[in-house]
Length: 311
Ligand code: AHR
Image 1 (cartoon, rainbow, N blue to C red):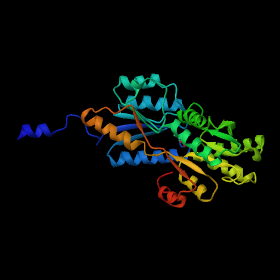
Image 2 (tube, helix red, strand yellow):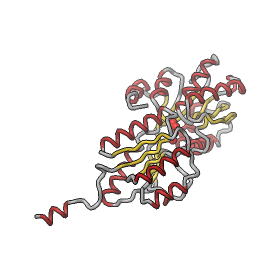
Image 3 (cartoon, rainbow, N blue to C red):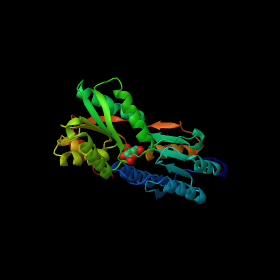
Image 4 (cartoon, rainbow, N blue to C red):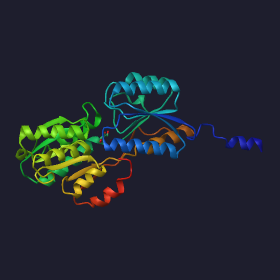
């Protein structure tokens, strides 16, 4: 009896009681706030102790946090990397300590053996979905576009720009006339849109492409203050699908958004639990869905379904 009981004892630790460090970028957007909320909820539901570190948009703070997690001997690290470069040294340290690292929502330029997997959307595809939507929406009309980029050097800023440009490359009527970072924040989205309106003149802007909804929401305010109608005088397409953009679409003040799930932690914890159970290694990329919503959708209902999810 004793022998068979011993066989039933798992050889590798289960998730219950494991400790995971999470180096989060900050709270620049509604989407990011939701990702933080969901990650904490997912950890609690699974009995995982989460050590949370807010880097306030600074890579140096993320590097410090990761070193701290390594020193504490956590069982795994989740990293939402603010920028794409500069991670090799600290990830080597985590690797040397046998601590698996999972990237959340952004990619890095580093050898793949430095992390276990990346849970992200296809950010080039997101830009393409936005660009293809606009191409169809303006169907052959001359359309000068202004672009609000995300944080400089971040993988979504780089890839969403690339994907959008690829999508409109075969449409000579679509041209990006101004492009600047709004750092993924509402406040900067508004400031930069004000400067676009000043330099270009509202009549010379047909559409805004914003790398996230928060910047689009800030820009909508700037467009209204300039006496123009967002969504009509200037078409607006952005990324994330946060509740406020659905409110704006319901009011006719925005036109389309590409959804990014804030639940990156769910797949990451699934992978870690499998790894802790029997050593299963995941694929290097776990891709999340990118769904297009437009003003033709039931935006009131979508807003209701999202408004209490921590955005
Ligand atoms: O990396 C994902 C991006 O980061 C989101 O689209 C944006 O809102 C956030 O700040």
